[in-house]
Amino acid sequence: MTREQCYRYLTERSIRSPNVHWLAQIIASWRAGEGVLPDFLGLEPYQFDHLLKRCFPGADIERQAQSGKNLDFSRMLEREDLEKLLSKFRSSAVAESEWIAAIIVSACLGSDHLWQDLGLWSRKELSALLEHNFPDLAARNTKDMKWKKFLYKQLCEAEGLYLCRAPSCEVCVDYRQCFGPEDD
Image (cartoon, rainbow, N blue to C red; front, side, top):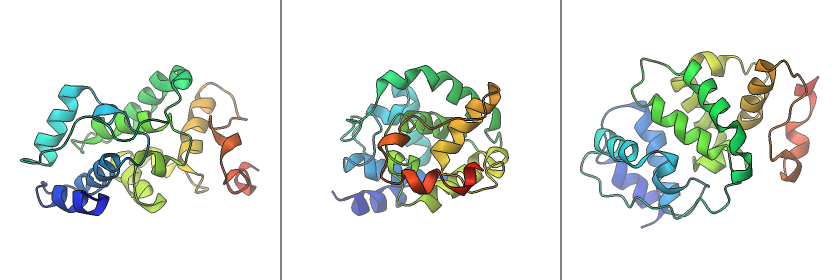
């Protein structure tokens, strides 16, 4: 099944919620071996099962990852800090936000842009997902900073550090685009 076929399969079985669009993209890409998410999308197995039952009732989705081969587990030190940051800004009005936060944290361990590591189909999709699930945090990104860089900058600023880089920037092909005027 192609990524697009998997997306259609999921959305045909989905509940009405803005998050199912993004979750269907993430799962479809994950099933196609795109992105970096590990087994269960980085969720606990029971969380993954609950997500599927709630958002895509009746969908039969494999639980093991086709992707997830590029995770840098040496960066696990910031995992708890990222979880706390997203938890602090999570919209309590959106039921799936807890799962979305855990999936984002897992994707932050990848080496590409966050939208690519998640398996979303564009940066615009990631912006919309963050604005919906973490509106106050997304509103802080007033200079349209790349999202992974923005999240890590939030962690650094919380520690009183104001020169901070996302962990995989030096190997990224878009290095010059990310570290331009927005750092002034």
